[in-house]
Length: 255
Image 1 (cartoon, rainbow, N blue to C red):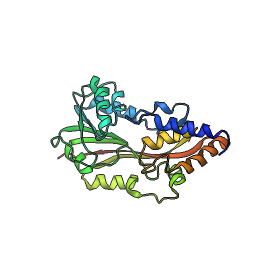
Image 2: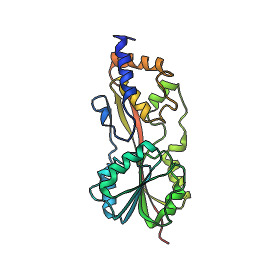
Image 3: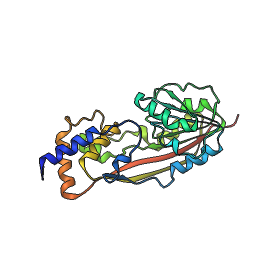
Image 4: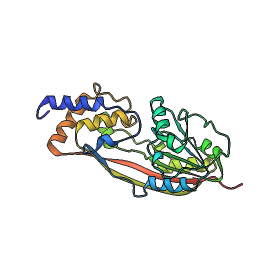
């Protein structure tokens, strides 16, 4: 690798040391960038929350996105599967009076049927469309920004070799699954968003934090590819990839 080999080791060590709890990406400032979807999920979320009576945020992470709403509904609940995030979410969402419940991502939701007029989720790992339908009131809506198929595939392919893009995360699949569960899709939008990684520490931390990009990622197992990428960034500037995102909004029909 070009330059001082110790620089590579220092950057890798830095990327390994940054805590991965929560869903706060502020550490990446100046080290990596990602375009934001044009629809502005946070603004849509705030508008829907202001009109809701009872709302649920599924897979809230550390609650950082939900905490941004200026006004919470009279009843607000959130679920999260990863124990380190639970306490973060409970602290973060306490000012909104939210109830935060530990729920595995594929499990049934521990709420009565027809409980919520709004269910939201940003970047869920999976969606139980049947459970979304069950807990929504008739006329209630589901709003979600999701990670599309092949997201950041440039980095996946670099680390693991070329991989087929699985259709399970495609907007087409999401629409089919939502409709199969009995929901009516009101809105669907999708965009490819430019990402830039300015140093190898950012790559290492990103792959530790967003674990589905390179499943089973460890520095030791991928050191050779990381060294190649470090050299590329030093010679040619930021490594560019593209995040795939789509927005879906669906409604439970009135009885």
